[in-house]
Length: 295
Image (cartoon, rainbow, N blue to C red):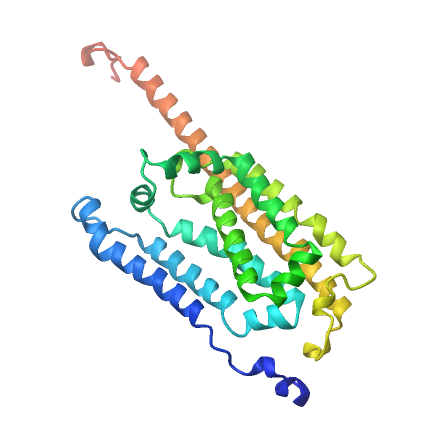
């Protein structure tokens, strides 16, 4: 890092108490659910949270904190649009699925009761088509020049945009890994759903990466962090959307495919064994005395 870069005020630590309160609040709710609510709901001798759910929760909180606190938040808001895109990627593609995987079904059904209004709203929004379209429409909207400029210049507006996008992302991930089994698609359906998700980002990504001029002039100012020009920063933002996000989704799709294929192979193998066992039972003599003599 050069002397000029090191002297950039962006590298001076900036406190974000609202982020600390959010993270602390989510952790406190998790502890309360594990120690107070869970033991009253789950069967005796059963842990309220599985080990893998705890691991997913820790990972989700870590990504949430990293994306929302200094220095990434400050760089994304004041210096680099590519950092802004990385921040959105972390908040919408990493945090929601991790926190959904960390949520047991008993907790989800306590929060959203079957007979409540929340269940009716969830039933409408968590369907694959609305969930997919709402999230991607809002995602495209966040690339509108006015939206980007206003978010950079107005802190509360920027925070509101993050809240809306993260909520939409949580809804978007329900058909894939939500804790309500009735809303999850079959594994082939999930693969198609994520494939469609990987198509949408290519539109704004191509627009950003192929532009000959800086679209978001609010980011085109000095001092330039690491000497990255405004146009190169914009191209990098497009590459994050086109390569990083799409690659991430396709890694998930590939893992799902091999899991699905392995399950089908195992089911076929068990089916063959069951057929063979049934055939042996049918062909077996009804009485031992009827069995042919081996002598």
